[in-house]
Image 1 (cartoon, rainbow, N blue to C red):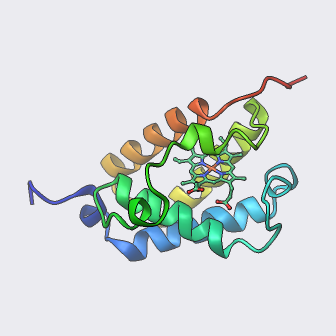
Image 2: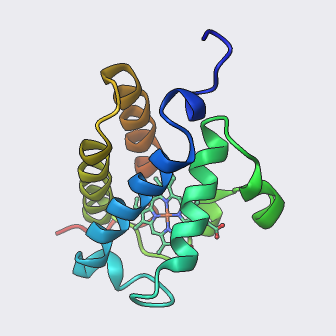
Length: 129
Ligand code: HEM
């Protein structure tokens, strides 16, 4: 309906669980990305933080805010050296996850546009060859 949130329109929590699971399966196999994760291959906490953030961003429950406060994502990413190569790798993992959940084209485009902008905004170092 017209006052449904994007969170609801794309299927609610199960869609976000699947998106984040597939995304992290790919991150786990990307040697550049996985090296940045403080807990190595133990990704349960990272999955929970990304999933609750995305659910909130797209109009779902505000669990992220309750647990973590204001997102301040760029600031929270300063400890990690994110260059354009890392951004491209992050986006490739997310593209694979979006392909897996196969949202209707309108929603796929909304998510993909957002991820491209957000990932580019996270770039904080310029160490590309
Ligand atoms: C946290 C890497 C882009 C959302 C993290 C962490 C790493 C990381 C290493 C710490 C994992 C943890 O929470 O324990 C990257 C890289 C990116 C990127 C390499 C490449 C551009 C993004 C984008 C978003 C995002 C585009 C959102 C659309 C988050 C969130 C957290 C997080 C919500 C948890 C923040 C917190 O509450 O502490 N990221 N990230 N990241 N990232 Fe990213």
